Length: 238
Image (cartoon, rainbow, N blue to C red; front, side, top):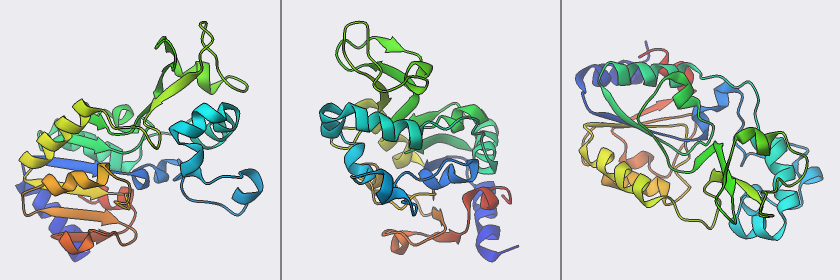
């Protein structure tokens, strides 16, 4: 077994208050692409970068184009939890993992059985009217043609945090609480480039900061352990 994975396995066995912080790379092995990655056909289909289309101002200005992107890139049918989701759920049942902080909006951690999941950027599985707040099932957005409208005439939107919008204060408060109390913080599948979520790791005070990622991140120099590889493959070995 690789030395880094052996160390990770030992630290998990020794720890009783683990927090996991994850990003898009956690779900790519479930067939959900990182929406910020651009394929060869991207510029032929979209006149704006993903961060622009998924912003609050763009949603209000051009909901038709927002939903064209949303339906093609963010509505994923049939995605199932992978080895990372499943192992994290097991660690929670074993009493070792106290919380998952996720930047993902796909609900796969809950599908795997995890209970304490803090969704920093919301979820596509919840929808509501941007005008009156009426709640709608996700199918109302996913299965519609064009822009979904509420009975009041407002636009129905997914309960996700768009660029230019603030993160939920209660989710942030609880995230800080969990991280500050953790004896081990595992960060996986994220470039740690999206703030304010990435800044949450500043609240960790322990000495088992683990980064599991395929590439380098701006915080590699602060890690106590770095494991290179696909997160599902790594977690299947611990």
